[in-house]
Length: 174
Image (cartoon, rainbow, N blue to C red; front, side, top):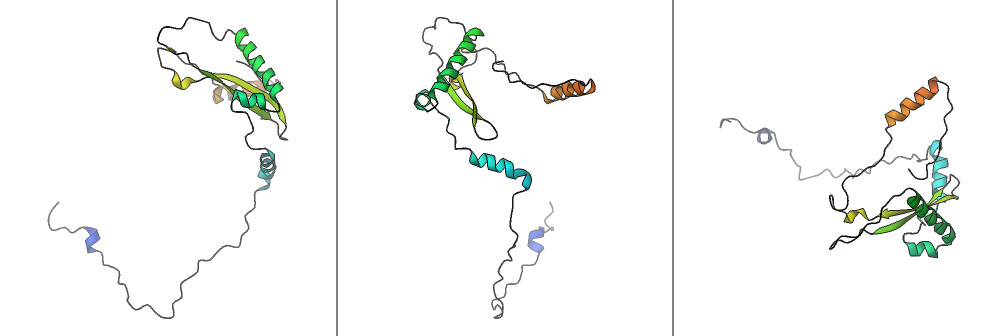
């Protein structure tokens, strides 16, 4: 860069600030809109059903589930989950190597509610505390089945072109 060029910020004139403001000037008050904000009608039904739901009242621990008013539902759901794991041979019992701590697990509880806010089903899942796991020690690979949206669209278009009926179903355990 040559020494005869002056940076643009230096060449711009400084604004002149008057030390004697005009006596007639009043501070301007910002103009406010008188518009009343309303929720679009398409969201009113959803908003009302969400408002009627209580705050998260699902039990967080096993003890809370057993003290809950719906404890018999939680017990039945947990028994069903254990039976499902046993029937599907989810685990195999092995001896614990020396110096290794077993990975803990915990129950996760959730009440599934309908559009009217009433409880439809109780869900209880036994999950591993995966944050304590170490790769190649506690597990070798992970697997998470996912449906691709593209695949679902293809199946729906085939069903539509062949005029087939489509049924939705809830899979309890994959």
